[in-house]
Image 1: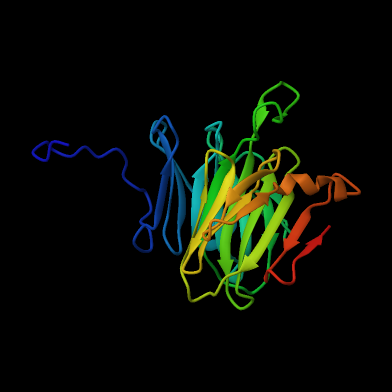
Image 2: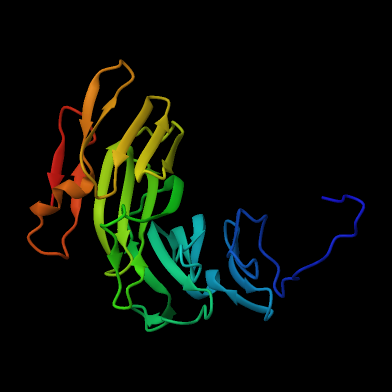
Length: 261
């Protein structure tokens, strides 16, 4: 970076943000981005100078994270508030047309395509959104033969002291898996999706591994060098009675693990 070079302004906002930006994510072409603060969410197309106030349109605030899809055609936004109500709100914004696929909410107003919209009066934090592609040979494909990626969303939740990992199918727009584990709200935690489709959870309690892909069981070693067999969440798919159902791994404590359909 040449510090002596005069800075180039790529875009000037038509409407100022209410406070300091918190997140900013570009697409791969670097011509569209979503930027957020605690109270504002804006979509901007630098090439066409289009600016959309998504925060006002969706009445969302307290944005927790943003990511761009693996196809580079849409943004995913996770918010903790909608209409000033705490909850879990995950929606997507088309890059080519941010006003596309708008539906009507309960009040008849235009709203984005929501993957989930829960009003639960609970605060969330340490949120991450990542794209998941199944192992070779087990990929899901659309009618045109294109590979469909899943969306992995993770966060810790206040009150019930849990760390939650969701896997969404972007084709059906349904939850595939929901993994729940104990996590104190006061303690920091971070989740990573590895190239092996293992989800790594790092906290002050240590490191936990979840195999969220659909693959064969394998043996790993724990911190005390004991060998343990790890099964993927997809190995429990046979428990489903209907394809629309999802599997909840409600294992807050190791001595009281539960699998719910």
